[in-house]
Length: 237
Image 1: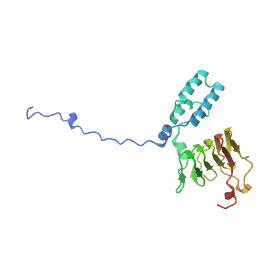
Image 2: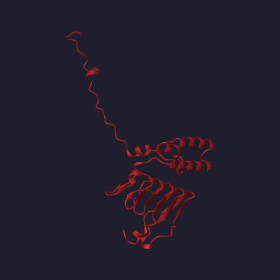
Image 3: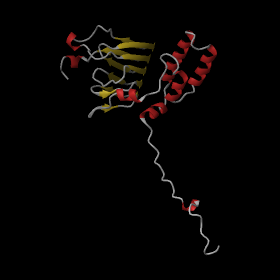
Image 4: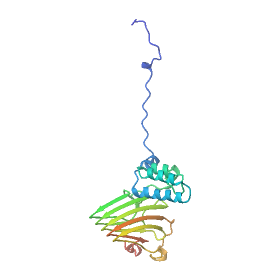
């Protein structure tokens, strides 16, 4: 190459390299859509699809196609795609919805949305942050879920319980609405009447929460109780 040969001033070798932009962390909405779903959640969406077909919103061919897709779905985002155009179908989280739900307060306990108990016991009482969907799998153990003092930032809560030779107690606010789907097999699933509770001054006055509880008890017990526990009503704790 001749000594006086000059490269063009804007040749690619001299062009400044673009700075590598760090990849943004996924937002809360994105993480919610990526969340793995349970069989319980798939069955809930299946009920929505079947109801829509019964009302004429879906043809039976569409129902079969969507059910086939549903049972292979792995994430919440896939459930949204399957049934978001139907009444009561799952919806994608929005910034406003996320902002509506308070964040954990200092000193508040945050638990995983799945409880697995085997030959042991687990209790969630006092001021804990409740998940919207809770699974309980108890074998030869005891589980207590007390929602009367918990922070429950959702209007509807879904609880799926499997009790095998175990005792599971779920305590809801006095004014809660409970939709119970029970399947006892040589076991017991019982719900306390709404009128039973502490003195009138201790009745729940907050917003009414709706609890959708699906309980399978195999040689075990599942009990749904209302209002604060007795020791709390008597001021002993």
